[in-house]
Figure 1 (cartoon, helix red, strand yellow):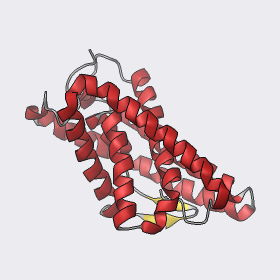
Figure 2 (cartoon, rainbow, N blue to C red; figure 1 turned 180 degrees about the vertical axis):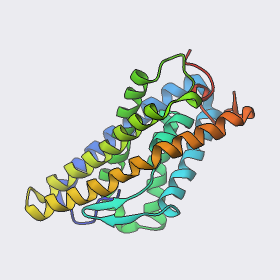
Figure 3 (cartoon, one colour; figure 1 turned 60 degrees about the vertical axis):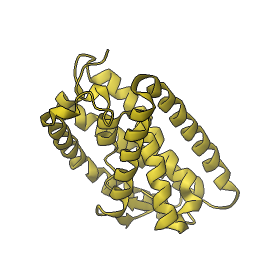
Length: 226
């Protein structure tokens, strides 16, 4: 979902710096809140695993440019359900940065936009999860309809932010609107895949009883909310 270089440039990049600072600041606050629940080892372990997975998603899984950005299978809902909001956010931000530093330095000027685009929908999805998944339900027991709703929320948020950046940078010209529509249509196809990936990962976690109580996954994965 990388915003193509040149879509937003010059002084307009200042807004992306501001939204990135706010997003990363909220990530730090969320992670600090989870630190009280899972401890330092748990938070670091989950964040590290999430970072490695995100980095792998960007580099190994299929991705291709469409319109104003690039379509990736990010699996943000899977990261959220397994590791929790804080580690998932850290993983998205750090994995994106590593990908830019080592493989796509031309994307680094767009880092503020890209990290905002990944993180804000994640936090919004977290709020939705509290509303649609009962507190007495462990995440390994999430239904397809619930996983689909979370995926639609996350991917829809990503598309919305990409559209915002494109309009902010290039305006409402027909060519730009067409590029945004092409990206949005292609990206929302991810919704057909992600819920199945979520359920497959959760099913795997359910069969691995040794993960219950482990520091490398969030406690809500196997147990109801306390």
